[in-house]
Image 1 (cartoon, rainbow, N blue to C red):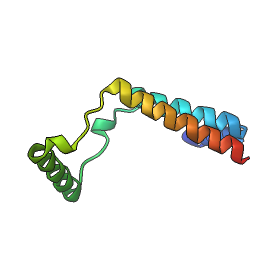
Image 2: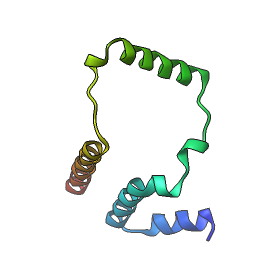
Image 3: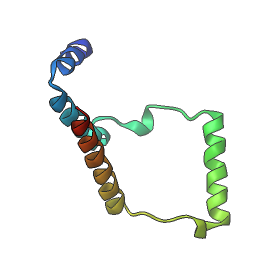
Image 4: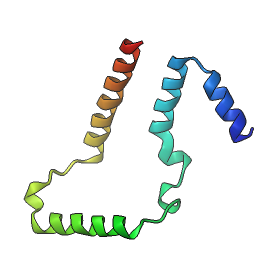
Amino acid sequence: MSVEQIEATIRALAPQERRQLVGWLDDHRHELVDEAGDFELSNGQKAELLRRRREYDEQPERFVRVDKKSLNRMFTRVRKNVAARLSSAR
C-alpha cells in the first residue's frame, strides 16, 4: 500500500476513528520509527541543549525530576482531556 493510499484511507475515516488512530500512533510512535537516527540537530538546537544542561548543572534544585511512569500518566491525562474537548466541541 502506498503512502498516498494510506492517506486517502485515513481521510475517509469518520472523525472519531481518526482520533482513535492519532491516539494509537502517538502511543506507538517509538515502536514504529527510530526517531534518534532520523534527524540532525542544528547548531542553534545544540547550543540551546548545552545552555539548558549548564543551567541544570548550576541549579539542579530548580528542576523537578519526573520518572517515566509519572510522565506517561501525565500525557495520558492530557490526551484524555484533549479528546474530551474535541468530542464536546462537535
